[in-house]
Image 1: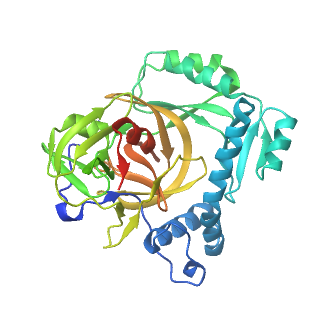
Image 2: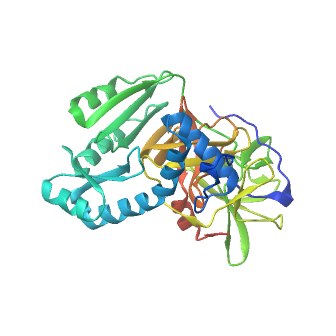
Length: 363
């Protein structure tokens, strides 16, 4: 179920929202990380230290390494085509590429990445995911790819009912599919970044963008579908369910390309990118403010009670009701728009798809 709240936000401080962190005062944190504001770096480092149980210097090294790791991963998988089966960043932020044979593995190593020979091809996993998604959607379930285990993961929340058919299908697909059970439910969240309000609802600002000199906010589609006029301007489009992106005309006269960090500082967003499993990320929201975590899955279909949304990013960053629409980012790179949450999980619409759909550019 969706929470019908939305935070009022100052029209003069409209900034893209995202999870952000602070900056540690010890010598290791004094080393800057390209693309990270001081506050985002502090929060990201502290979160990584706690999650991974590593030292501060190791956390800084991870964050400084991951941008190059993501770039290498994308280059290698693109070059290999069908011989690559996705990939991820390992615990040291080094790229790992899944391949089907030793010849492809040798090419991966020569390109500067780690290779792992796996059992299931991209086509085999895609067929399994398609088979599960072809069944009648069951609310409070999700289906996504886990490159670390070379499997499709069917997640079933406690609130899900009528799961016999999908569980039977998952069993028939053998070890291509893993079933995970979680507490609670999966639902579209509303809030994130600085808040916007309208019609008794609260959502958060995603990314400030422009087209032809006119400013727009790219936000969650379930927000713009529900509200026609916000305190910042009118909704101009909505794609939900199926996708979860929407567009709001920004009439405030303020549209900086930055994320609020909730302490008076901001994080500049200078480009859009593609999320990678294992990548450390931040998110900002009007309820939970700045939080950090990791990308855990990609290409996830989430079956909300309101309908199914596909190709989402799954993370373990904290999101709560009211965070919908805000942005997911890694340093200065924008990655996604807050869509929803489950127990210990959060889901984001890839921002690149929304930018392309509306023909807008980041401010």
